Length: 235
Image 1 (cartoon, rainbow, N blue to C red):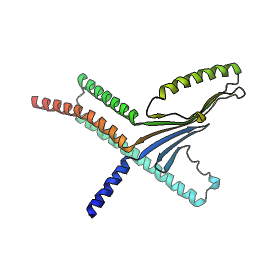
Image 2 (image 1 turned 60 degrees about the vertical axis):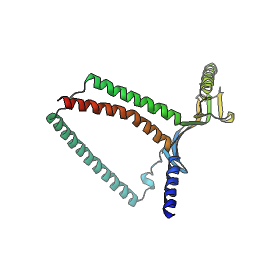
Image 3 (image 1 turned 180 degrees about the vertical axis):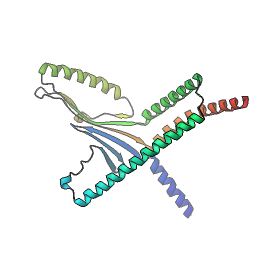
Image 4 (image 1 turned 30 degrees about the horizontal axis):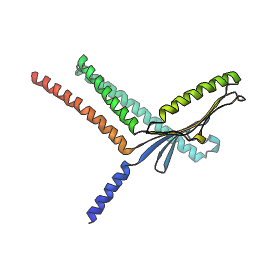
């Protein structure tokens, strides 16, 4: 009975994990803001937090930051040395064991494989991806009434056709009327925009995309292995 409860808890945890949704939220209202949200955890990517200046920092904290920077610089220097050594070792190996250049047919096969996998991934990704436009407010202003009127007409027409194209799509959610507006501002000198868009996808959907790519890759790997085996047999 205990074993069944443990197995049930593990399966429930895996199920919940697969249904987790990651959301990337982009906002712009004079300044770009970017957030990543998973469940109730919200991580701000942009704008970055402003670091405290020297005037608002204690001597102890300043010393700690100094040691951290020195350690980081030393680590970077060591990595550069290791990278240089690896590059030299690789160069010596290539000189000692020169690699056979790929034939035109092999290059074509690689291009076909990459194109096929890319198409599969892109198609699956946009099938699963959910796009929600929470709000969109645009004020058109140029400082000249005639130019503003022309710009307003062009933007309104483009928005209308875009709305008509996106509305039937299942994965796209457009803003309600109160959260959508395009206005001509004849008094201001500069245009402004207030927009919020969220992109979301679940863990199981990401795995589904990965498996589809893998299943596309396997036939090419099998074919390549068969070619190598045939070449070895002929030798």
